[in-house]
Length: 188
Image (cartoon, rainbow, N blue to C red; front, side, top):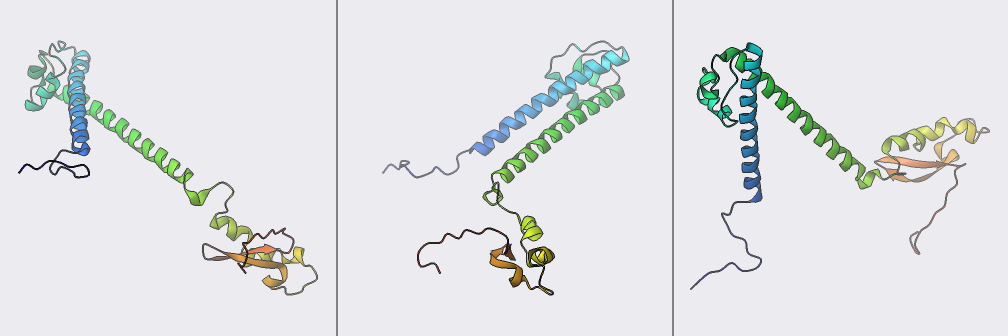
């Protein structure tokens, strides 16, 4: 009896996109490090006056196998190892800094887009800070002298109408506000 894969079933043990993407990223990082280590050889040779490296970009990884003698791995006679590793460290730190800056920039952009697309933050919708500033009982009582100057000790019910709640706070409209109420039949 032969078993086949039917539509809707999934094959167990297959490599997913995540593993493939991780391997591609690893390959790109390895190639980038090789190029930077090779370029560090050129810069170090130029600064110290040593012979320029003859080896190709892949020789940059060869330096990792003999860190005490980068001149041999890069085929650059007279290349000083301390100068080489200082320059390589600075170049790698610069690359890491640029990568960190890009990572932060992408995160900030995504955060801004998520905030912009938040259905609770639609343009024209009051935030809890907006409600606290103008529509709470305390805010309404601060305006009581202007709203009903004839009252000596006004209560919030004397200067406004309770509309409901927002974020756990009562929302009030003043007696001067225009209010339009639209409700379906039999909604009370």
